[in-house]
Structures are given as structure tokens and as C-alpha cells.
Image (cartoon, rainbow, N blue to C red):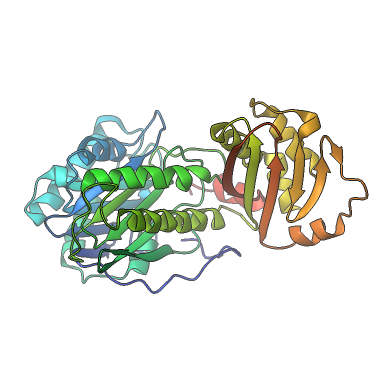
Length: 408
């Protein structure tokens, strides 16, 4: 991880271990750095799994591996490599995934299809099988580690480890959910973001877990953007060990299903916000809400148009209350909009209404709002009932510096 910690960083929470989950980290040395960069997590038999993956048309072999085996809904292991994305690596990349999962499966005594894999880092360099296997050998004999250790080991350009937790009550049983995530740049997911992993002791059917995760993703991970770029490797996986002893959740109508779904969505929202708060070079966390659109989908596309606009993002970085850039972003979104119905606010201050600046508008409270770390922008399209919220960060020179030197 970077030594310059984001000004928006949150402290890593005190997260409990989850029964049936054993995390370990080791040094595969995919890059020349003094840190653990391979994570190996084992799961007790009976663990179910669900996942969402990138919509990129150039996915990594790890993403393809996960997609191929998620349908079975069974997991015994997870291997995460940091520093090498193993994407756009052809047959060599596929061979590396097969080797990694086969070695982990042999150690666990399960089928390779029960082991999931992820990789993150530089694109276009095959994952070195010798380093991966040596890293796994080290992980197999390593002592179990903390979630903070896992969060650090899966990171690349992240400036702080990211984790979150929550609980839910299913019947008379309290279940725990914890999650770790990495992501800082190349964040504009169509599904999830970079690499995220959720672990729970709840007993929940894989198909139900998949339904809940897909819905949670739509409202959280798919509503964040740092730079409008979707990764080749984006993956979020959720694992449920069933060790809490609750009556298994076998449908969306089962006792406690609504509570677990709410907790899962809350956890995903926490994790997604942490990624934005560590956006490369970020100094501002920005929430953009669009209402009054023709549909929820239209509102979402308009909100992303605002969130992805370099002109909007740089204005916020400079603490400039230039609402004209928001008008521009609404207009270019390609969605139904009417200039003379448009209303815009910064913070709680309405700055434009029905196509005109608010008469007597005082910029002072807006300027004060923009000096803070948490910024809100509201837009009312004035056409319908569609509504959406997305989250992004500002764009500073720090983003350029990080990405200009990324491969070195």
C-alpha cells in the first residue's frame, strides 16, 4: 500500500473471525516490495458462495474461472494474488489459474472447482507460477492472520486497508458478516469493484445468497466511480459457512431473510464507500443524488455522467461552486432532460432552479460546504419519479502522479 494515506481514510474496524473461515497471508513477491502479496483462505465443508464479476469484455482468467464455478455454489478455498492482474495473458494466464487452484485443492483435499481465485495489479504480465506456488507453500504453513492482514495483502495502490462488519438476526440467532475490499483506481464497476470478499457464519442457500448479493451490488458497488474505468479483474465474492447454527435461509421469504439481506446491503455500501474514499489522489468524497428523472435507470445514467465528468471533479477539487459544469454533465448524458425544469443544489443550498440561477443566491455557504471532505450535489430533472444516488471523488494531480508511475 502507498505510504501517503488518503485524507478520507477510515480506521480499520475490530472485526471478529468467522467460524469456518481460516485466512492466511504470505509473500509470493510478485513485485519487488517488502510485504505479503498472496492470500489463502480455507473454508470448512458446507460453505456456500455467490459472486459478481466485471462486465469488461477483456476479463482476466481468474474472473472466467470464478464465473465457471459459481453456479455450483460450493467453496473450500480462495487464493488472491496482488501485484499482478494476470489479465490479457492468454494461455499462460489460464495455466497459472489452473496451477494455483489445483495446488490449493490438493492441500485442502477438494476439487479445484471448489477453489476460487483473484488477481490484481499490472495487466499483460502472466502470473509467475513458480512464485505463486512458493507463496502458497508458505501460506499453507503460516499462522492464521487477522482481517487487517488480509486487507493489506490484497491491496495494490490502496493507501489504507479497508474492512467493514455488521450483524443480522435470523430467527433467534445472531449472525455476523465481515468484509474486506481493495480498490483505489480503475473504478467504474458494472457489477462490483476491484476485489472484495464477504464472509458470514450464516447458513444460507447459495442461490438465495446470489440473489441477495446481486441486488446489493446494484445499489452499492455499481453506484461508485473513481475514474470511469472498469477493471478487467473486478470480483466480489460472498462466502457463508453456516456455523452460526441458524435455520438455513432457503428462500427470500424465509425467516430472517429480509434482515440478512439488509445487513448484506449495508456491508456492501460500507465497503463501496471505502473504495471511493481511497480514490487515487482523492481529497473529497462526493455523493450525487438525481431525482425527478424519467426512470431510475435514467437517473442512474445522469448521476454517473456528473460523477465521471473531469470538469465537475476538478471543480470540486478546487472548491469551486461551478454549477454550470453540472448542467453540462446533465446535458451530455443522453437522457431525457429539460433545461427549464432543472434544479441544482450544493449541500443544502439551492443554486439553480428552472433553468436559471436562484435569485439572490449567496455563494458563501456553498464555498464553505466545498471546503469539507464530504460533498453532496443534488439535481432534480423535473420530469418524473426516477431517482438514483452514486458516489465518487474529486480529481487531483495525485491521480496523474500515481498512474503515470504505476508500472515502476
